[in-house]
Image (cartoon, rainbow, N blue to C red; front, side):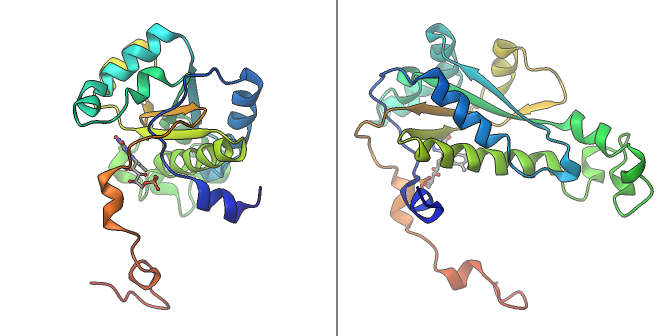
Length: 206
Ligand SMILES: Cc1cc2nc3c(=O)[nH]c(=O)nc-3n(C[C@H](O)[C@H](O)[C@H](O)COP(=O)(O)O)c2cc1C
């Protein structure tokens, strides 16, 4: 599949048939996602894959699935056969940026002991987002469907999956075989025009 087609076809799908996904396919998808760029090649992107039903149900609760169902959506999270929790391992960046080729230069302020606000841009979040996008596109490339849901109960998610301090879970990506789903009302807003999101040469927005 060409990139343009994969980008056009990608959308958050909030329902799956529940049919299992071949573990080899899940592995291929994650193998693509791990090839995302990373600052200093820190490769701080991490993924927790969950297929066990009871754990998926618990993640669905932590993501407040009942609230979705109350709004007329399908029980999307609990029924998806695969959950992937993408994480940003801040520790990988702090240790990478303490190495000799990364200290004393323009990134000096990003020293390991610096507080997160001392990092001009917290690269671990940038890289996790890049990996998330690759993951979503790889799912499309495999003819499957993915959806991303924020998890408000992040502390519970950490505890459930044993995610240590310094590693930041982003939310949950569901992967499965696509089923008809209810469209998000957010999409009624439509795409912003290209010239609203791009400034040519100099900032032209409000
Ligand atoms: C960071 C992020 C958080 C999101 N959180 C949720 C969420 O909690 N629940 C949900 O149903 N969709 C969530 N979405 C999906 C967006 O609503 C969706 O991407 C957007 O409406 C555009 O639709 P599309 O991805 O199908 O093109 C999230 C997307 C992103 C990128």
